[in-house]
Length: 249
Image 1 (cartoon, rainbow, N blue to C red):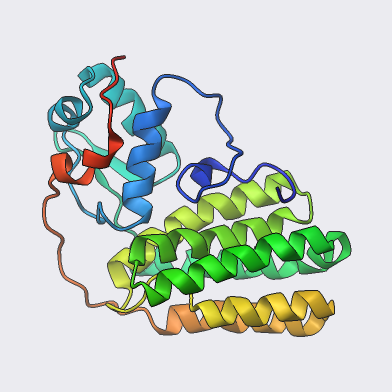
Image 2 (image 1 turned 90 degrees about the horizontal axis):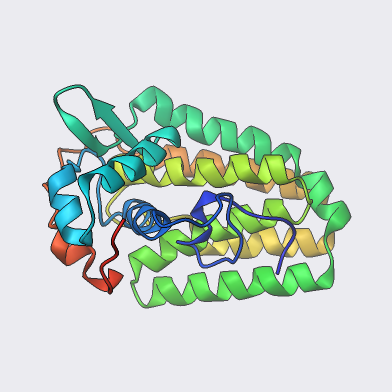
């Protein structure tokens, strides 16, 4: 286990820590976060309370609570008389999300290097290996999840929980940006970039690591396409069939 707690996206990228105290809404919340981050629920998708309540076998009041939580982390927008939908970041927001990530993650790298131990490197290598396998398998959902896990866990090495939480939330918003503006082949980050970053971390080359990380984010933004079309209405029953047991609130 690396570093400190790593955030609201803990459930979807397979780690053990989380920000929120576990409660009866968490299963639905985590299922929706996972579907949004893995691009199974695309930006602009409507999230009607009645349909979600039927899908999960819960009350509309319970769904409303979950949607409010998702709105608080800017994954969902709620409009009067129009209901909730998956957030669609504008072009300016899209650029700002990655600019902010670049500033935060690059600035924290000296601390990451200072606290990095062999067990951290081994855990990071495992994430990279799983990400590479996901790309070989053309498993886009896993590639997105593991790409975010790499960045969050890298920052978690430094032990700054506040910064790690911020990065974790930003990875969620990054996924929305890529869902809207990413090229068809763009699923998370390029895994060979992560291999290069890990090599520089092992060498404790702070300047080169920060430079490579900055270029990594610049390349992501350079490959965004700001001419994407609208998304279709989702089939909740199909998307959440894997959720298994239906819960009551």
